[in-house]
Length: 396
Image 1 (cartoon, rainbow, N blue to C red):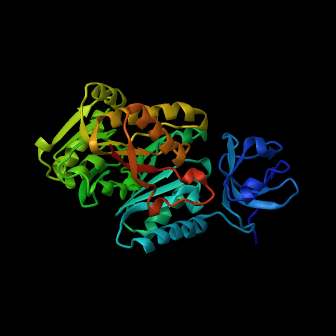
Image 2: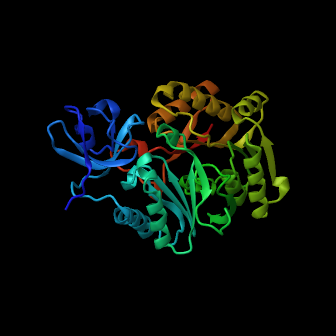
Image 3: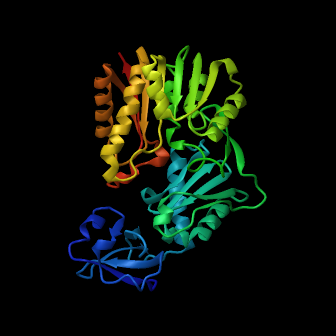
């Protein structure tokens, strides 16, 4: 027997987008008042003609008022439902790389679990909850993970701005007592010490793990600039692949210190490294004007585009840093340029870099254009789950 959930109804002709595969209904698409609904409450969505559309959760405080969990009219949203979804998401990853214990285990809507991200670092599980609906079920999520991996450490790292839009507080805490918040992980043969409570996002940028290997055949003997370095993953991979010197440029003193510690952890000689704490945008401009030259410049900035309305402004920012970087690359060198903004399409990303190259007076050849790895797979047609661009250019 189907669970008793309240009924939420769309205005006429508003169901097609969801039937075509999108996961959300917006406040201006709903018929009637939302006053009778609590934030995160499970409900069933119907068309204006009373056709069942989906089961999900509602939040009257958000512009996105409904998020899809299931298209089954008999679905019961409980711990067993979440367990099946989480286990299926995990199985999809493990069948592809059974030897890997560092991966994104759940990727929100792309795994039909909107509002939930889980990153696995061996026996540590970092949980990010972004919506009121998933907030209601977080204890069940923790219980599912602990049942799947007895003795695991769970950390709730829900610090994204989306929570404020959902009427939720920011949370950063160790869920399982008696375990430290720090762990040393091994990625591509390199050690990284992570304090999960002090790190960005969920601790480490697992989505770039395969892209770091782009440096494997080009870094030996080269001078490298790792701009927006964070904890040094790009630069340390350059060191591993034989770079003569790597300069780490990062605005945060705390993250730059993590880069130093990670360099020491891997035994890299200090005379191969330099660390600069400053604003990368400002310093790139200063260095390019001063005629500083590098063999490889790496740009992996935070997302410049927080909304579609800011796209034009963000493109100017991407153009500026790529223009400055291209002026610094020695002829025959390489540029690695990244964007993690899903509002910036691959075509717009490449167009922006080409405009930068033209204004810098350089010619460039695109060697590789990579995206997200297998554990961040894109659910079609959910374009929002396709966000990462990582391009390697030969610079003339």
